[in-house]
Image (cartoon, rainbow, N blue to C red; front, side):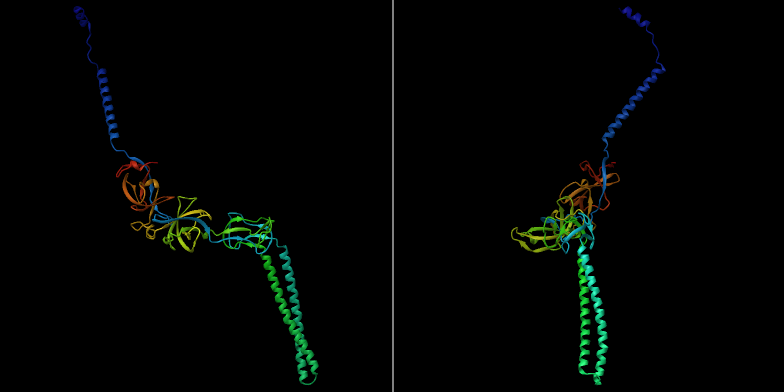
Length: 413
């Protein structure tokens, strides 16, 4: 066997390393180095802190009509009512021939909202005017008779003084004169009566036109064309006592019943906030107008009038409302921060924490600064911040639990 192995070794041809073999070796080494560098870079990238994606919001001054968070000392419920509301009717009984209103329509003072049948009223006006014309003619005739009787009487007086005529003739002239003068006075009074009759007839004609007594919005349309309207009473199925109901929306306020045990916490002019049941996230700045000086024996409550600081079309009569009466000291300072500037409103997602103190992250040059702030109330537009921020500050909005003081951030689209 050994002889065969030696023979085979002698037959093996030894070839020297070529340039191709050396090239392949360098390629392998280059690939290995690139892979090592990439792996090291990947490890370093994952090891370094990465910028957290966030959204950004700006702190803005709170609106003037937003209650920013005074402490509440008493809550009470009530309803929105209109201090100025009228079911408008005609002054006379008549048949409706035109109705010019619809529910929800705004009317101006003196605007025509309905017309009644004026046929009889117009005929009465024509009759009164004819009677006035007759009275004017009678007055002219009486004046002519008086002007004729006066010189005759004066001439008879002179003749009687000269004993030209008898006393009986003078008495006859005087009687005619007195009758003419009285007839003139009576005719003048009759003309005055006729003129008054014309005024009454024209007023009755005007009463067939129903006008709005004040500016407001129509909430009820009660009458239709062809129905009878009577201001006294409803006589039948087609008789109405009114044409429609008009509400002055500028006179809306809240009436709440406060337990007499806590009425000592309420006073005139006190600040308050109101929340409509229809808009529970909307706080409306309000104030106490007056306390009605009488108590309800059955309910043991006292009625309090609360007025809105601003008007809004969303506030409607008879809406349910919850009123929070505020502490005077905190209410006076509520709209001012510790630096004397106005309170700010920020998105609720930009604040961590509840109650009076919270945390926000102010964005500055690609990083965030953790800052403590004093909080007010939560409103429909966001969270009220009473102090700790400046107007225009840019705040991080998003998953704030991923942030820390000094953390790098990037603004996401």
